[in-house]
Amino acid sequence: MFHPITTVHYLVLSAALLAIGVIGVLARRNIVIILMSIELILNAVNINLIAFSHYFRQVSGQIFAIFVITVAVAEAAVGLGILIALFRNKQTVLADEINLLKW
Amino acid sequence: MTETIFFYAFALLTLGGGVLTITRRNAVHSAIALIVSLAGVAGLFLLQHAEFLFAVQIILYVGGVMLLYLFVIMLVNLDEAARQPQFNKQWWLALACVLVVGLELFYFIRKGAGAFRLAEPSPQTSTLGNTEQLADVLFSQYLLPFELASVLLLVAIVGSVLMGKKEV
Image (cartoon, rainbow over all chains, first blue to last red; front, side, top):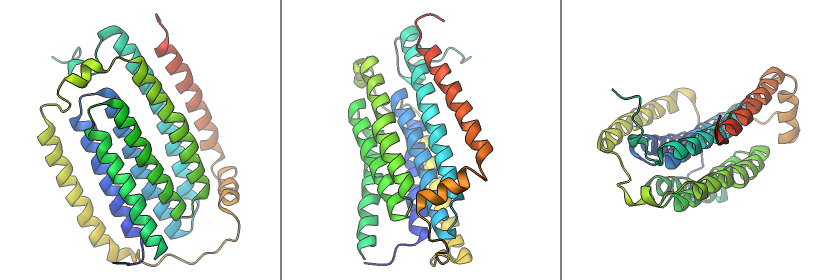
């Protein structure tokens, strides 16, 4: 039961969180939930970076995680801004009802 | 042994919160589940001795980003969306694709675990604290990306203000 925790444990956890996030992006219709799923995906990447940073005793992985967090915050701000503009014009937040560019 | 217990507790928080996030009908419930999940990720950072990122994760995600999400959920009327089906017609295809990719990832991790000898980490070399080490590298080796990140944030601020305006 009590095996020591290795980097492999973190990699498996990160892969599982990534899979959950991708399912959310691909299968949900609500755009708010899709943006939340993108946050989950970016956090899975961060777990991976931190795990390897700890394993190699290099802080570069943590620096990259900081940049990933920066990009995630910028993405959330712009994404939610687009969502508000979209809701004002189309009165819907369902991704498959926004099909103006579809043939 | 304590580390093992804490790892599994935080892993449960992370994955359980993630699953709840993508399955709840009510968007506010999803946001609360996402807070739980991100707090679990913060705990994992602490277990990996990334104390600075632990604090950043709590302050930035749980304090900042989730507040933004909750504000938008209140601004946008989600009642109509909550009555509709929550998953689109291709959800089974998405599930199948993710299952295949997940199996592939687990296969590669299994194969790579032996090749990289991931079980034993290399020995600790530095005696500096985590934040001090991070600052040393960030403000010398990664100074240009750091400055570029500030430009990115400026562009994001201008973009989101422009998107939020009534008429452009």
